[in-house]
Image (tube, rainbow, N blue to C red; front, side, top):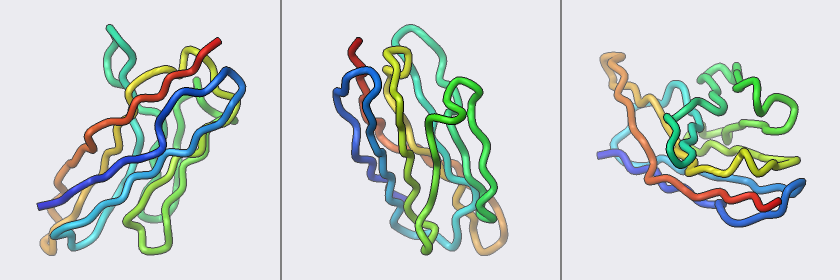
Length: 120
């Protein structure tokens, strides 16, 4: 079993900052790509940012220059630093990891989601 525990969501005024964290634990051989997705009310879930095991990153155009994704040295915790937040960033944010087995098979896991609300 793999568990993802997210933290750091909340209510913030426009222009403010929040930092999300997601810690992975359990029976994990290794972790490949880690990422953050979000789903606003009435909309589809979308990718926000991803980071590979080699620390390559990519971002949604809407957050480039404002959000930064990173992972710890053990590569089991992923962070999302969100600056210059806008009301349109309001959504439930989900952590996602691809956990790799010893045979190299990848398994997708999702966190429970954390609410981010940006007031204008």
